[in-house]
Every structure is written in structure tokens, then in C-alpha cells.
Image 1 (cartoon, rainbow, N blue to C red):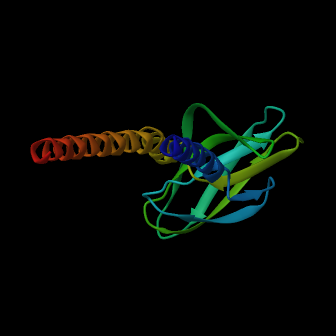
Image 2 (tube, helix red, strand yellow; image 1 turned 180 degrees about the vertical axis):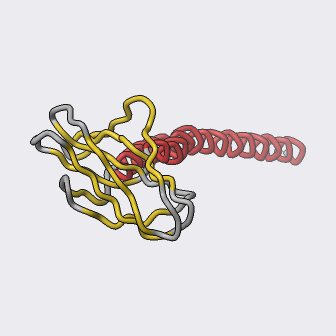
Length: 166
């Protein structure tokens, strides 16, 4: 029972932690420039939060090489603290470094841009949470079976000794 509860708690914690990690860690308004610490291994994502469809443009410069912004395929969204963020771009940086990112939109709408981890990075937390959900209760059941078998074998052995002695 305790292992089952621990597995569920760790599963939920892994899922919630993964989703919260996806929220943009840095947000900015249209026309503002932000510094993005980019690493080719991480591929930071650019997000947009708006209530109405907008035409946006983003540019990236600086760093130790020419970084490129690649559009993401499909619609990938995450909602955190009531804000709906849609992943729109991924930063393809040739080398680790600080890059300057600027985004703008043509429409006069309420728009926020953000930089954070790509949605694909949530897979690790989800897999870890699922492993905890299945692994911890499974280990608890296995330990319970082993303890039961050992106790039964020792009782049986003790009864035989008593029967021979008595």
C-alpha cells in the first residue's frame, strides 16, 4: 500500500515538474530583445502567448556562430498558471553561447513571447514518473513475496525440528 502511494506521488510529481519546466523561463514583449543562453544540445524553444492569431517575426544574432530559428511542425502548446503558450520556433545554435533574440508582430494585440525548453524535453520526466508509478509498487510486491516465502520456509523448518524433537 505504502509503495503504491509513493509510486503515485512520484508519478504525479514527475508529470507536474515536467510541465512546469516547459513554461518559458524568460518572457518578453514584442520589440524587446532578450539574451538567450543557447547550447546545441538543448535547443531552446521560442513560445508565444496570445488570445488572437498574429503574424510574428523573430530574429536571432550574436553568439559564436550564426544561429537559426526553425519553425516547429504542428501545434504544440502548454498551459501554465492560466497562460497558454504555443511553441513556435526552436533555436538551432551552432555553438554554445549567448544570443540576442527579438520578436515582433504586425497586429496590435496582447502578445507575450517566451524562451524555454522544447516540449520534447518533457519525455524524460514523463518516463521517469511512469517508471516510478510501476517500479516502486512492483518492488514492494516483490519484497512482500520474498519475505512471505522466507517466513513460510522458516516456520516449516521450525515445525519439523519440533516434530523430530518432540
